[in-house]
Length: 267
Image (cartoon, helix red, strand yellow):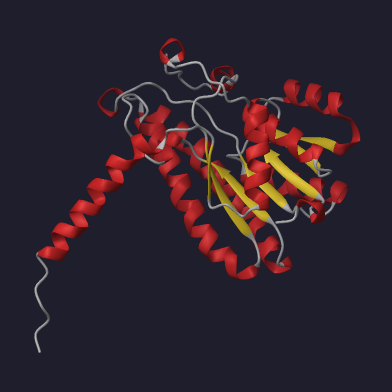
């Protein structure tokens, strides 16, 4: 999508971290942005610092009535939403399934997956009707391969976002609307603090994660580029394929094995 034709972006989880990096990249390209976030204090501060090109909407992405109100108010202020970035999310809980509180599982799925779906439910039909727009859904490297203990519930949600996004891309492509999957690796943000604010558990991983050279500003620029190039998948870090390849190799081997066992059709 040519961003010079975009007038209004709606970014969830936009008051901090990757979301804010995306907001700033959008503003830098002349797009007005509604920043949606559950953290009212951070939202107020971010909007005040960025002036009239942005506005704020307090939103819990689990709240479908809240989505409807936010859409009405956003479009009254800045016009139809051309760019939707479903970025709000919380961190893994660090629990193996056998030890997990079901309420923690439900919270992770509700925010990281259903919250994304709610954004699609709210805006996709209008984009399709106008024949214009682009949706970016934030998944994770954990939405490509589930290989780290303690992130099982998070991976379930992020794999769901991956599937939702791939299906949505096929549905909207004939109507001129683009869809991209954003798969970030580890980036230093305040995700742990945001997770605690909604009552979530935190996986104690900060000391085990390698320092990241990728910043939220870098990711913002990657997302802008991905939208302009209609990229189906935006990966933020190098050397991801080495962790993803074994999963796809196993799937390929299973398919080839079954093909080799196929019984010729009777005729």
